Image 1 (tube, helix red, strand yellow):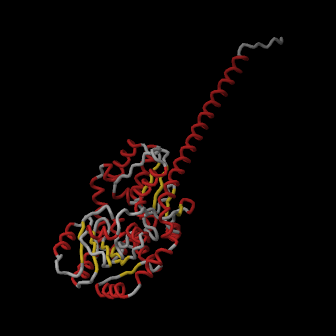
Image 2 (cartoon, rainbow, N blue to C red):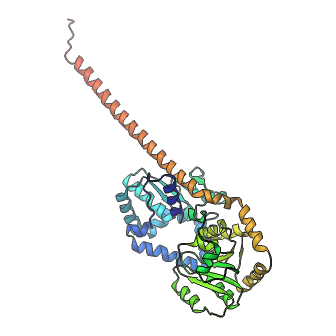
Length: 408
């Protein structure tokens, strides 16, 4: 999502000037086995957040030995080989990476084939991360916050190779939605007069969100629920199977959607996990979040951001959700949290973030091209100078070759 946001911004700012391709690198390169292993590992992390947090702490402890370059060489040789061949065929002018393993493969390919392209790594965890984001070989690591920068420095990333720029979201989350709230809800078969909660759990739909949707529905709270199950087919079937016509709670159960910006426009609050894109998409639309869990230590920073700035809440069981629902339905707490969201400086920076990053990437590309031209010009001068020097020596030798000493 970060890469797509930057691509869209480049296309808007510099129409027709650059070819920008966003790829699922391992899959596109044909490293099927490694691609599957990485995605299954992430699904496991989502399903076991406590274990993932402990693994993150262990990874940070070993620092140098658990950086992405070493992990990639040990576990993903297939990705290294096929990723390098893909880059050899593509011949990029610049690489903008949003995953630490992809950054490593791009660097390995650059060294192997002696390419000159820059590698910019965007740290997709905006507040805190883990040690695999550290990569001193990357030309630049871009982070969203000063907190993330301090974290990288503490783990050994050179300070001069870190740049802080706000978190990019797809520009459509800032654009005016053509439909009204009432139209969106009516299309979903929901009552516009009720408060609406948007429940989701990221692109994979893995987590505790389904449990809390069921709790709200079975207790008959007078609200609408838009339940987005994404790629989780079993969750979709489970929630669809509990729908009754006589419930006071309206519900629309959806699979994978591409109109989250519209659904957020119609929502008053949300239940979701602490993924960075998910959280900030909600907050930039003025939708406070109830966070059910974080996938590891890196997402806990996002949860802490919401709690500290009073733009969201954290729950760990149904009793905590019950208490919070009573406050939401019977007090003006939603208005208070919306106002906190509106005034937050970091959230205010989000609409401009993809455009700032787009300009930065294009500037780095232009700088790389200027540097390359200067190097080529220097080589030409050196070659020409060598040729001239050689010719002068030859002429000097020729002019003195047949001179005789006439002295007797």
